Image 1: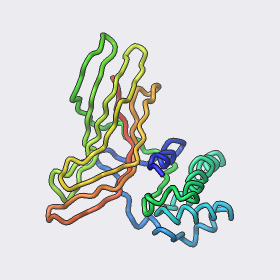
Image 2: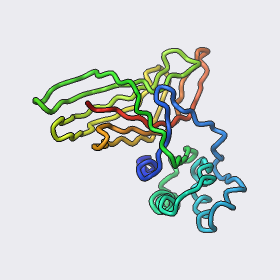
Image 3: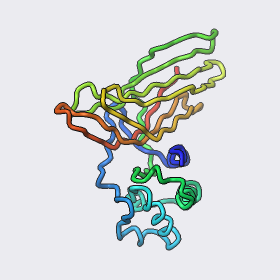
Length: 227
């Protein structure tokens, strides 16, 4: 199954959190290993819901902590109908084997950062009102390594009269050698706020100063304001 299926986790009322430039690291101990569900989960969900989490647990390392929060009827319905049940159906069809061991988390409350500093690398005016831009920002810096940054780059066109934005491409990449980052990523334009919203979750692998391999799970929610 393509990783994009998991994007629905972040598209409908559920968003991951971040302080951009000071990315929130996700403690791995919050996630239960594949095939393991904490005893308290069964007390928080119905019999049908528990069976769904057993199916989810057969593939993903799940962070169940969101179940300890108060969830409205509408959000709970969206969670199971739009996210969990479709994923479980895909798991039963054998479409998720390549995702075994991936992290699955949900945060019910967004902590969006609107203060990220962006550097404009390209500005091309198509006409008086429409421009093409590429903007870049460093969103994470590893503490125990040199020049180990994650950079977010966004290419877009913007019509200042119609206030219409077309996002052409968005990447979050590591600029360090012998490192990798493959996030689940959602990018959208919010016309009322006049900004591009980016949220993601993923695991960053890199070498520290002693050349030891390190990994950290990150999640984030930040914006690029359009002027």
